[in-house]
Image 1 (cartoon, helix red, strand yellow):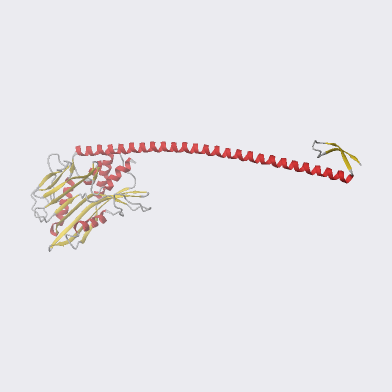
Image 2: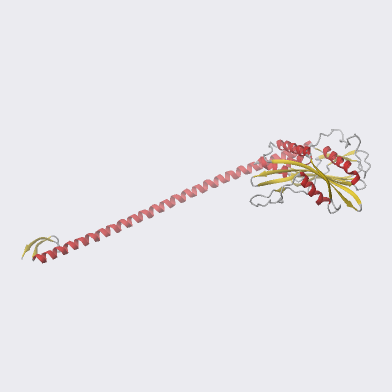
Length: 373
């Protein structure tokens, strides 16, 4: 049970960190950062990535201002917002937005507004607090997210290409396994990860822009349905001429994201505590159930014994009644036979003209000896 509880937190987090699963949502596939500085976002040629909308002169470190949970490298001079958003003590979601000085380029890492989803079940059950939606692959979700996030501000949104992101999917799966291992759990069978990206062109105020979404979706299927979520999400909007550079910069920012080891340990401890509480609650429920079963069994036994006693008493009363009726019938039959024989004797004496000289009973109904007249 505990294993599935942890795994559900991994895959139901829409770009989120759930308990010790915090690392899985955003840090999946992150490379180790240098302990004394930020990792630079570089192009294949080794130079700093420079979207056309901004003259980037270098990278700087952004530290999570809410819980000091993570650091990430961002271009100097950009406006950066981000942090940890919690919905409970063990449900924490990380997010980051970065905008170039001229506002033409924006980059998003993580989106706490994405919920976890419940797969439609064969029985038509509801998903509780999670919306019920069919599972979407990485490319499918990237397309849907682009339309929801950018379709009203930059249109028409026209597909420009898509591709699988198998390396990101594998990195997310590996990171989720590490997160679960930190709380003594293993990934349950049936969990899957899929990565994909999609790009689009659009027009905003007469300017040609490009939109890109990169994500990993994960799903856990169960016999009655299952759950799915988005453990990793990257998105950007930039002038069309800067699409390739912005795509690389977005991936580099994500790759530089590092989580505070102490924060990770605290989250893992909170998750273990939660799992222990769930286990204890489960044991208590089992004990209560066993006590209820024992009480119900005792009640059923007592009821059965009472029913048996009632049936026995009813049977005995019926038997006695039948015996009394049989005795009464036998007595009546005997009297009838006695009367018949007495009548026959009287008739025979009359026919034979005889007189009874000695009676067999005091009532003079049966003759013991006769004499002829």
